[in-house]
Length: 145
Ligand SMILES: [Zn+2]
Ligand SMILES: [Zn+2]
Image (cartoon, rainbow, N blue to C red):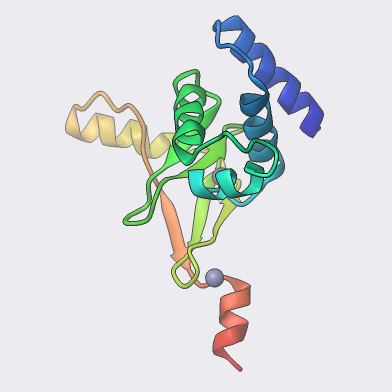
């Protein structure tokens, strides 16, 4: 499954004429395997042992390239630095207000809401955002002890 996703992502890069460097390969692989929606900094820390010449800026630039070809989504929730999500199927995010963890939540897209919003306001709707906030199980159990 993961290998298939990586293969498809590399195909997409090839098709769009983006050069596949060992760093890009490693960043993509990390994003696909990590379910944690990492920041550029976290990706850098995970891979710096492998690529001593790589900088956080390089990681960030590569993530930008992936975003432009549609492989990666940049998540900007409030204050903190952007987190990155490998784009698979559409999903929503549940966010812990205590530790900032982001967990995927699969739910059918709320297309009716977009249609209704468009109908009521006359807007040409492009997309919507929905985030669910709360306390994750780990943080809840800490609070109760
Ligand atoms: Zn938490
Ligand atoms: Zn996600």
